[in-house]
Length: 144
Image (cartoon, rainbow, N blue to C red; front, side, top):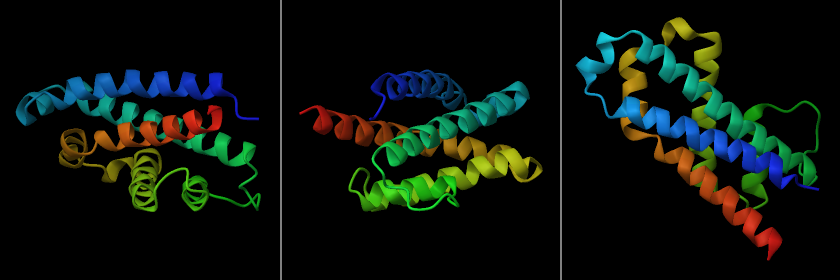
């Protein structure tokens, strides 16, 4: 059974991080780059926000019995949700890119540039909200 409290806690966490990320996104590029704490904060908040998305996707995929193998990557959870119609295939591709970026932050952190992070802050934060809407729609249908 899907644990709505667990999902809601993750949604709250994501929304809190999005609020902080939007504050950083509101800075102009020079202002952002002047304080090196901004890049560290942005990377950590992006990483943990994507990890929360993965947690939600994994929980739903496991509880709905969508997982066919124990050898599955984080991105595969999103593929299973798309195959089940819980998220769109188009958005699934965006989420996979977000996971790849998260993996780069964790494992290839020296290759993540300030300019790339600024671009994500300015252009891609709505993808998190899209994910939350898709999950909220799924939960609402499940209740209805």
